[in-house]
Image (cartoon, protein in one colour):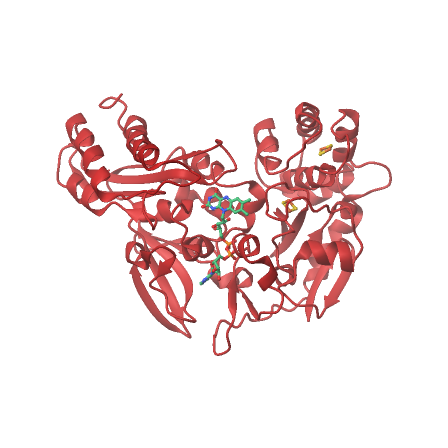
Length: 464
Ligand SMILES: Cc1cc2nc3c(=O)[nH]c(=O)nc-3n(C[C@H](O)[C@H](O)[C@H](O)COP(=O)(O)OP(=O)(O)OC[C@H]3O[C@@H](n4cnc5c(N)ncnc54)[C@H](O)[C@@H]3O)c2cc1C
Ligand code: FES
Ligand code: FES
């Protein structure tokens, strides 16, 4: 039995936990405001909010309901566009109407819900953040300018938001209906069921579902699912003994928001904005990115450069190995049947450190990479390299740790000649193939150029 609150209604259902939430909302609950466009997480028409009780607070995140399994709604507050209605138009609906932000209307519920998510979020209330909140929503009619104006109006309306009393303020100011104020208390009565990770019977691990529900949507209904994203002990980012530990079910957006991860680079926000949309980042887990084993997985490339270890759990027996050894061949992993990913960890930089991530896609945002690469270099005060890690995606059957090039840099003085020589060496370690994302020559050139971009960002005095 799966229990949750849908808008203002308590739900209890025995439907399969692998059913897609959008289907439950539309076809079981007849809430047809949530639209289905692509069913692949790309258009944002199906955006809903997932509210999680964290102590006395409710945290709301936007997600695409077309890729969210029903089981991930357990104990949550699920909000559809119908759930943000008040008497008359709420502030967000009014801004969209006044600015002509809607024409055919198909995309509008998704935009409204994403903008409600923006109002509810802890982030800064400026135009840039408002646009980021709706970057995963596509509109084919308006040309976006009117929606941008609506977002501008909403930012103005949010001036004076009392961040210590966010929900009350949003209700008082006609952003949200009253019932939001009671949700935290109502969710207290929901039991946190232990998610059984033992694998005696064949089961499928599902994190955010953003890979599985795109690749194998038809297979997810009949199977028994282990909802790893529901395991709170698999979420979080913490420091212990000089290492950064990341729970397997930590979302990509949580990585973006983490101060520990931000300490790697002043450009950290930008790196994560290059990964999918806010809705997908709110769902996509670290383990999902690694186990998906895509040769262009952004988090895989990011974590490889940091020389991370991965911890696997088989009914309580832990096995820790370097992430670079986890990827064995195209979509082949050093992972035994039934093992689940528990965490990833890496040594936090101690010396003077330099980290950068670069990605080139067919379009800058909301696309997967043609080639991506990350670098982590630690130097002493005299510019001698103490530690180096360089990784690249899209240039081999696996997300590739460039072992020779990384080792080549260690022990040497940073200089233009050294960095230049590393460009040639990296080329000997990769074996790209021609595909829809580019030819062999193009991908080789991209890797060279992106490595130059690393050096220009990190050592602007030496490399320009
Ligand atoms: C619109 C869209 C845009 C995207 N953009 C990007 C992008 O820019 N960059 C990028 O890298 N990816 C992108 N992705 C891919 C995807 O979001 C990521 O790979 C994501 O991290 C997958 O995580 P998940 O939790 O959703 O995986 P899921 O779909 O839940 O699972 C993926 C695999 O991991 C397994 N798994 C999950 N958790 C565990 C665990 N704890 N232990 C063992 N196995 C586990 C599952 O069984 C499955 O085999 C995009 C996807 C979509 C739909
Ligand atoms: S239907 Fe397009 S993102 Fe869900
Ligand atoms: S108003 Fe028609 S798709 Fe946006």
